[in-house]
Amino acid sequence: MKTDITIPRPISDAAEQLAQKLGISLSEFYTAALASYLTTHQKKVTEMLNRVYETEASTLEPTLVQLQVASLDGETC
Image 1 (cartoon, rainbow, N blue to C red):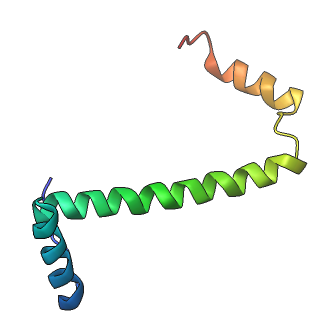
Image 2 (cartoon, helix red, strand yellow; image 1 turned 135 degrees about the horizontal axis):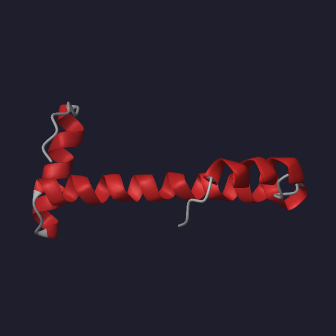
C-alpha cells in the first residue's frame, strides 16, 4: 500500500542515512520503525489493562452472559 506522509527534513535525512547504513530501503526502514512504535504502545495498553484487572473482577454479570448467548441465536464459531 502506498501512503503519502510529510516528515520534517532533519528526521527524513537521518532516516535515509540510517537506512543506507543498515542496507535496507527507506520503505523497509519506515515500516520497521512504525511496527516498533506500535508494539511499544500496544504493550503499554496491555500493561495498563493488567493493572486494572489485578484489582477488578473480569467476569460478566450472569444477566449479561444470558443476553449475549441469546443474541447468538444458534450461531456457531
